[in-house]
View (cartoon, rainbow, N blue to C red):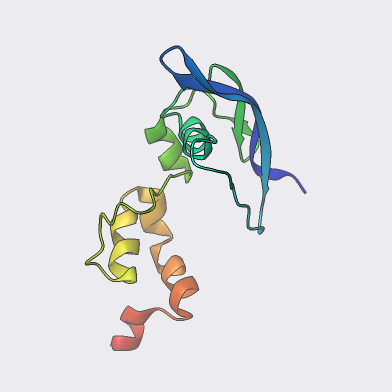
Amino acid sequence: MSAVLELTGVETGYGEVQVLWGVSMAVQQGRMTTLVGANGAGKTTTMRAIMGIARPWAGTVRFQGEDVTQTSAHDKAQMGLVLVPEGRQLFSDLTVEENLEMGAYSSRARASLDENLRKVYGFFPRLEER
């Protein structure tokens, strides 16, 4: 089984301060993968490197077999690779369904909104309301 997301030897940092040294990991399709570590261990920087917010100095990031190391965060989002920051409570007053609708801004995401709602609810609520 090939990895849907793979980092190989990723290094990056901020300014002249290196934060990541040779990070390698693989995320398999259909599997839950977690990134754990103490505060300051580089978890957020790893996620930022994946998205291109912190540009990797070395190494590669592959998504669905394609090298996306230098791809912009906007283009990665169009491909379906996104970062959802935890703990910001950006849309805390919205329902789960409203959050899914807010996240379906790209044409690719809009096209799969109904299917994602089925995955969350087990049925499509708007159809059941009719």
